[in-house]
Length: 172
Image (cartoon, rainbow, N blue to C red; front, side, top):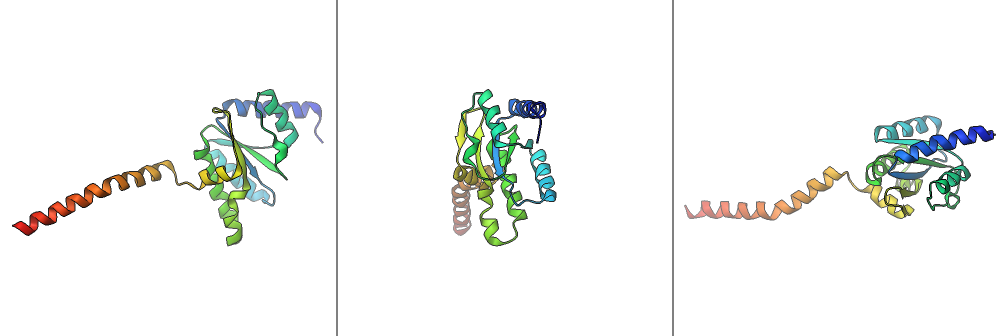
């Protein structure tokens, strides 16, 4: 059991992380091995975030101190908090894919979104439910979406140019 000073130090470290963060993502790490936790920490670090595991009660105290109205007691089991400097779209996808990779069977792969419990946008002061977080996390990266949009917009023009090209070859 941690002493009061140790808890105060943990709150201070988490407060510093929160001050630098734009998004907090809450993930269930129950039944995740120590080796996979190290890998998860690395994935989070590579994507501009920090994974902090602390008691829900302490996290509630921190959130209350910062004026954030979010109750961590709504979650069952062990909760890890990912403090991300970017938005949910940047950190949610890699964390979701990580939970899919460590899943042992197809049913567990389909339930990878349930490991993402919720999120809080610090900048926008908005909470996100589990279903919303899972949907955002399953989206492809921004660059891929922009490429798909550009392809969709360019397809009619390309088809029209193809038709014109074929018509010009028929008349000569």
